Image (cartoon, rainbow, N blue to C red; front, side, top):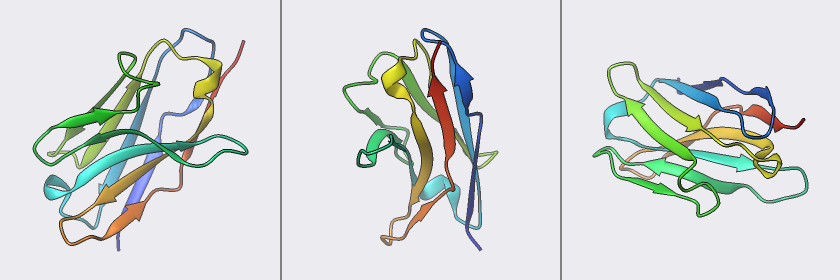
Length: 116
């Protein structure tokens, strides 16, 4: 059974930082591309950042220079370090795992709220 469990969300003031974690089980983590997506109220889900099995990364333009995605294959965990947070970063952040055979799995999401 595949499980992706996110943690680390919460309420933070503008300019603050949060680190999200996504712990995976039931998959061959090291060969999967891992990604973080977000969905704000009334908006479509959008890609935030992705990291391949080889460690290549890609970011949405809106978060470049502020967010960093990383992975620890020994812990089957992917991280999203978020710095200089803005109110427009407020959303539910979800973890995604995509394997070489086209299977895609999602976590339940974690709420990030940026507000003073």
